[in-house]
Length: 296
Image (cartoon, rainbow, N blue to C red):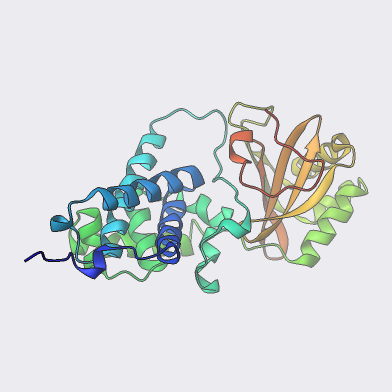
C-alpha cells in the first residue's frame, strides 16, 4: 500500500506559498537589511523544500523553512562583513507595499533606523533577537535554528534588547510637523532655522557604494548638516518629491542626474539623523514619482 506524505509537507495553493514566502522575506530582510538577500534566501529555502524526498519531508514545514532561510541569511551576512564596501553602508530602502504584512506593532523594526541599529549586533545575536521579538518563536526553536545552547540564545536576546534600548536606541520616525519645519527652512535657504530643526549632534549618513558621488564619512553637527542640506537642495533644481519608504515618509531628490532618497530620524522633536540613499543598486525597489529615475 502506498502511504501518502503528511499533509503538512505540502504547500497546497498559491495563497499558502505567498504567505510562507512573505514570512521568510520578513525574517531575511530583518536579518540582512538587504531585500535581494532576503529574496534569495526565501526562494532557495522553498526550492530545497520542493526538492526533498517525501520520505524525509519535515513534520513542521514552517519551522524547517525558517531554519533554512535564517541560516542562508546568516551566511550572507557574515560574507558581507568580510567584503569591502565603499563609504558608509545603509540598509536597502524598499517600497512600503513590499514589506511583509505583519501586525502593525511588529513592523516598526522594518524602519531603516532600526535595521541600521541591528547592524551593530553580532550575526547570531541579531538573528536570535529577530526570531524572538518579531515572530515570538520559542527559545528552544531558536536554539535549534541557530545550533546554539538554549542559555546562549537567551543571553543573545537579552543583550540585544538591552543594547537597543540604550546605546543602540534608534531615532524615532519624524512627525508631519517636524518634517514640515525642516523642509520649509531648507527650501527657503534659511540656515538659522534649518540649524534649529536639528539636534546639536545631527548626522547625515550617505550611502553611495562607490557608484555615485557621496560623502564617504558622516557629516556631523547641526551647522554642517544644515549647510549641506541647503546646498544639496539648491543643486536639485527643484526636483524633490515625497515618497513612502519602509513605512515612513521620505524625500526623493534628483540632482545632476543622480537620484537620492532621504529619510529622517528624530530625537526629542528634532532631526538627529538624515539617511541619504544614493547607491543605484539599492534604489530599484522603490515606486518613484514621474520624472525620477535611477542613475545607471
